[in-house]
Amino acid sequence: MSSRTPPPPPAPPAPRQKKSAGRDLSAAIGVGVGLGAVIIASLFIWKAAFVGVVAVAVVVGLWELTSRLQERKQIKAPLVPLAVGGAAMVVAGYVRGAEGAWVAMALTALAVLVWRMTEPPEGYLKDVTAGVFAAFYVPFLATFVSLLLAADDGPWRVLTFLLLTVVSDTGAYAIGWRFGKRKLAPRISPARPARAWSAR
Image 1 (cartoon, rainbow, N blue to C red):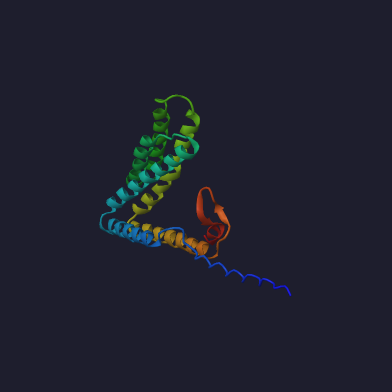
Image 2 (tube, one colour):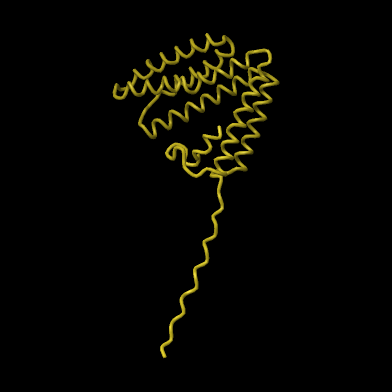
């Protein structure tokens, strides 16, 4: 009588992987609270200081955008005229209104064209096109906040605008983290699912 080898016991199920938010949430909350305190203090104590905060944020945003363009697409948008012109746009929007912002935008675009002429001509068109796009996309749109701030009740207008932005972004993040599966743009934002966009 032959003995049969008993079948091996079934493998235990793999432990369910805990869903991760994709970032250090504690650090993100801490940074957000700190930035919020600086913003609220500058808004209601000295409005001009808030203009400076916006100008700094614009310069950082331009640096990030131009760095990514050069890193991924080998497009060298000139940062110096963009940074100077971007800060000038924010200040001009607060001091001179929409007309001042448009003048600063035009001068920034001209500065981008002239600055890029000091370098070799290869890639000139794509570099200046990206530079003008960056000038419009980051600082010119940021002058909307300066125009809001210039009104008598400007701090409250800006605070309402910021709160709506935070609520929208936080809600999209929470819904995307909880329900999202398909990535919206994996090469640009690997952790952002399509459901987050629809939540906005």
